[in-house]
Length: 224
Length: 224
Figure (cartoon, rainbow over the protein chains, first blue to last red):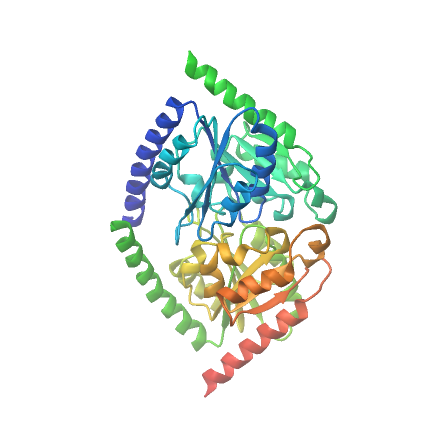
C-alpha cells in the first residue's frame, strides 16, 4: 500500500513536469513522439530510416534513452541528425525531468520541428511515464511473437501507433500478422498499425506519411 | 533522494524474503533458476525444450511471470509440466514475496528437483530483484543486436549463464556472435554462454547439460 502511494506521488510529479515539457515544445512548434519497445525491436533503425525520409520536410532532433552507453546517439549522429543521449543508470525508463533538462539543447539546434524520443528498451515502465510527447509509438518486431499486445497491454493502450518491424523475418518465424493486429486492436481499437522492414524498406513511407501528417495537423490546431 | 531511500528499503525487504525462499527450496532439494530477458527472446520456448530434455532426470516445475494472461503457463502445461502463473498487473518484474506465496504449490507437486522461474519480459528491473533462486540466467535473441550486454549491463553481471537464442535467424540479421560474446564477457568474465535454436534444436543439449550438472553440484554441496 505504501509502495503504491509513493509511486502515485512520483507519477503525479512526473506528469506535472511532462505538462510543462509539452507546453514548451508546442510553443516552439516542435512535434514530439516517444518510441517504446523491448530492447532490440529496431527503434534506432526505424529512427535512422525515418530521418532519411522526413528530415527534408521537418527538421529533426533525437533524444536517446539508454541505461548505459551512447551507441544509439552515435548511430543517429552519423546521419547528420542532432542526437542527445540520456543514460538512465539503473532506471528502466526515461522520465519527464530528464527530458526537461535536455529541452534547451533542442532549442539550440535551431528550427527543430520534430523531436523523436527513443525510450529505454522496456515494454513495461515507459508506458506509465508521460514525457510531454504528443504521442507514444509502440514498436515490436515479428520475432517477439504475436501475443505481445495481450501480455503488455499498458503500452498498447497508451500508444497511438504501433510499428510491427522486421517483417523481412516473417518467413522464418511463426508470427501471425493477422493475429498480432487483432490482439493489438483488441487492447486499443484506435491504434494505427504499420508493418515495416528496415532492411528491405517496406512500410516506412506509410509510417513517415502518418508522422508528417500528424505533425501537420498538430501545427494547424495550434495556429487556430 | 527520497526515491532512492525508499527503493533501498523495498529491495532490502525483498532480499530478506528471497533469502527465506532460498532456504526453503534448498531444504527440500529444489534447484531453482530465474530466467530474465526482453519480451519475445524465446524464454518459454527454451523452457519447453528444456523440459523435454531434463524432466526424466530432474522433476520440473515452472513459475511463469507475466503482467497479464496465463498464455505461457498454458504452453508449459501442454507438455505435462506443472506450471503456476503469477500475473504482476502493473509491475515489471517478479518479486520474492510473489514467489514466496507459490512455494506451497511447488511442494504440493511432490518430488520437484528443478524450479524454473520465467520472469516478466524486461531486461532491466528483474536484474535487481533476488527471488531466492540459485542462479539468474539471461536470455537474448540474435534479432536483438549484439550490443545488448553493453546497454543492459546489470542483467549480464547478475547472471551466471547467458543463452543466445534464435541462432537459426543468424543468416538474416547482422548479429555478430563473436562481438556479442565479447561484449557479454566484458561485463561478466565468468558468464557461461550458450547458443541455442529452439526451432532447429542447436545448443539445447549443452545448456541442459550445464543446468543438470549445476543442480547436481548444488545437491552435493548441500549433502556435505
